[in-house]
Image (cartoon, rainbow, N blue to C red; front, side):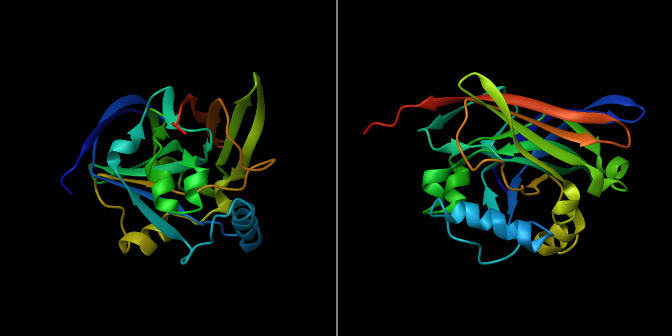
Length: 230
């Protein structure tokens, strides 16, 4: 890959904190990743209500530009029809895999025409802290994702679920890469159904909680809507 992006993270080890500079040359978004087929079908159905077609493959993988990756506290979007999705992501640097927290902001109007373009048009927001994958691998299925949205000044729970509800990392690696996550790759692991229907928000807050070590990755960002000339 020719295009590269440099990202700086803090790594929260069980023994302390350290800095990590990552050079990223590939961004892949996994979709349709539910282990429970009924829950997966519920997510397909809620998107179908918005005119978004179902997948050709389960799971499906969407390659995006690494320039879409952001670690900021705000993003700009075109129009009022975008919304976030809380996800874990995995990144390989120095032959070591790390776990992070991110949001797949997506244009829902464009999604009915092209899922890839609907993801490409919006920034993917990353938490600036990572965990070493080996520190959470044993309790992976017990890790919990949550997201809250702010609309008209009040915050409400938007998504919540255990990582055990989604396809395990090794299965994603096997499906997309033939076994191993490549160096310099950011792989988003997919999301779960939302509470109360897919909808836009003024702000998005997210968390990945590790109950064994009682720690969390957290990040929040605001959404600035740019006017689209009519």
